[in-house]
Amino acid sequence: MSVDISAPIGIFDSGFGGLTVARAIVDQLPGEDIIYLGDTARAPYGPRPIAQVRQYALACLDALVDMGVKALVIACNSASAAVLADARERYSIPVVEVIFPAAHRAVRVSRTGKIAVLSTQATATSGAYNDAVAAAVGVELTTAVCPRFVEFVEEGITGGEELLHAAQEYLAPVIESKADTVILGCTHYPLLSGVISYVLGDDVTLVSSAEECANAAYAVLADHGLLRSETTGHRRFLTTGNPQRFELIASRLLGDFVSADTVGGKLSYEHIKVEP
Ligand code: DGL
Image (cartoon, rainbow, N blue to C red; front, side):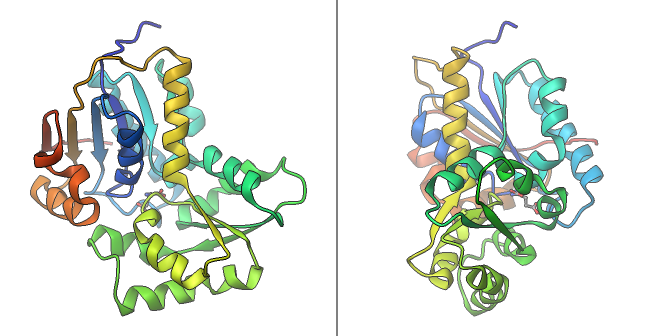
């Protein structure tokens, strides 16, 4: 396999959530170019059947591979759960996903073995987190599905009474389970970590699938000799929806990270048509 070390890293999510992974990757590797693809026209993925998530996700990943990326980061738990095995066989470049890195970290940091994962319906139905912790001794995993969280984020909402009430409802079983470690098992959720930790309290450790995925991406690039030494730091944001709206919501959620004024390299927002 010959991969161009100066090619961009391809990062994919259903919408805005994967930007939390992209930001964590750029924090660690500011010189790398990234192409981010958000399938906002078809988000949310969470309520969809796994077969459909798989079809949409593979079409988006194919589009990134056709653009010549040097590695793929599936910055979406729902898509990771649906396509991981296929993606590693389908592409000749390294593929990084979000679920195993987060599950691994949670198992390491939990003192009691009582772990909870907050996720979309698709991720919960797949059982991917249960599989990921299955080999760990003494772990009890509670799953809480938080469907409206993604809707709030896709609208750029990270505060307010309605969100607080939804969080109190979704997190009640997690509090009940006495989990000491909670995995944010959807890349949209780190954008809601304020309300989530407010409801769960200080004693609970939050594990972000976004941060862990970024660490895994660094490790995979290093292992394959794909970390570049020269710096450009171009960021290209592609959306299957409206690029103006994407830029507006992305800047509301992530501020400087997605703003042209603060980026050394080039930054663009573009529409992409992806036919599943
Ligand atoms: N950010 C995604 C995840 O990690 C998907 C959210 C959605 O589209 O429902 O699961």
